[in-house]
Length: 436
Image (cartoon, rainbow, N blue to C red):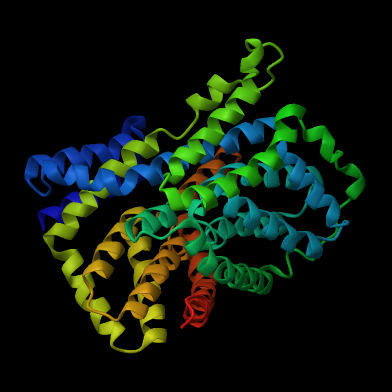
């Protein structure tokens, strides 16, 4: 009960963030209390840090890369191209914006998609002067696809990195399973969002009022570096995997290289357009403290018996057949993530799967189902993922306020079918991908 009460208090502080503490210091406060109350031991700190450090620094590196590319105009350029491709038809633009969000989420993580694409889409909607119902449809689609399309690569979500590291899944091995599954998730997202918003998006917009895409580019050198850098980054993830180089080291190297280009370090900063120091100040350093603090609190909850209960439930699910085990694990993870946030939920799920007595194939399905549940399932509630909290924060800053009631009404309608389709796709594809 002490561990549970401590978790509830910590989560409340993380959401509330009194006196501007931020999510990091709020979570660290809970971790300190956990240590003082004996819910966790000092030895647990090293265990938790070993689990989360790679994911945490990979995320920081990706966000630094994303912020620099955003300052250079990369995402604005892409959004203007997509808007022009829409040809003045809202019905055509709607799926194109979803696909753009899916691509950004895959390469720059779900939090990057929520943080960067949302204000750009909002600016375009204001420029096009679309009706409020149409604007809401595009806003919801942008926030929703940030999570539902964050499955394909290890780097696409913090959840993916933590799970891949915990179960020793290589970059290529993970992608071989989850890229096809992500296609099913994106297709289901398109279908569900279209059914939900097909009427509001049935509007036309004037293409001639749009700026030329090249007008969005503020730093041509960084912009030209973007595509080769992304290709080299993905190749580096694949080739570094066999020799055991952590994902965060590769991502950090790419971030430093991009900072050097943006800051024109080879010529002492002369000619630099992007304020690199400001970008670094706005990097999400609070995530480092949040990862350690929140995971430590949840680790204590696991020590108090939550992991054992989860393992017994997963063992029972595993005896019901692979399809039931996959769907059951995914929805169970989704519910837990919606209640406690998907980052700590991922750790609880991983620990429980590790203890569950199930066949090897079923265990592998559960590992990926836990990822899917924690990537997609948080859309049930606003507190489910950091991407959603970031998205709501960006919207509020732009004058768009979505209440928790409005959000949950939409989330509970849209999320279950997409989650079910994705989990069934995993159950069908994984035996093929593993050769069994």
